[in-house]
Length: 191
Image (cartoon, rainbow, N blue to C red; front, side):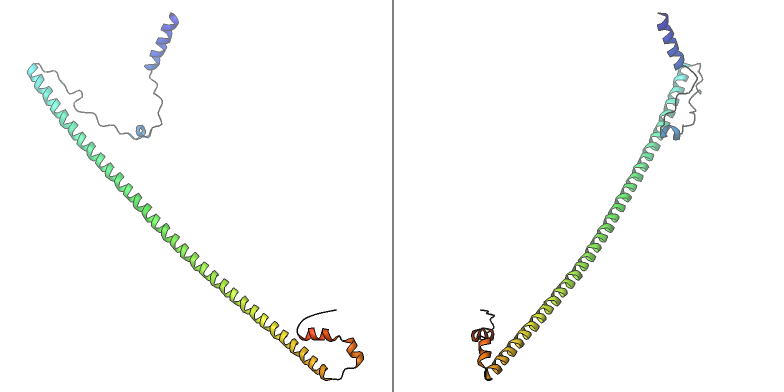
């Protein structure tokens, strides 16, 4: 039983101790400004007449109600100012976001234009390269055809000249008639 009383006494003594309570890390407590002491506190002198006391109390209540009304008005005005300030900040932030979005869209569109131009230039270069290659191939093919035609003409001319010349029997045996015939007509035929 003595231990129960001892623990209660210790708890009570702690609650009434003079050491300060731990400071909470709250910014409101650090920045809070207390109002000045009110003139009503300690202003009551006990009158001798109850009617006079009632009158004085009614006057104090009216004055207190007026002060509360003024404090409420000031609070409402302060809240309105804070609301307007918050609304102004929100609108400014929205406007800044809108401008940033517009700027980003502009930059994106410009980048897309630049990429389109680069793509167009690359396609044009590619087309020019293809045309050049085609022209080179055509020129090469024409040259080969021309060379082939010239060789054919030379061969035909050679055969014509050789056919007009008297051929010995030994030569005739060396050259097969049919092989000449096939070569003359552009075929390569070997027996």
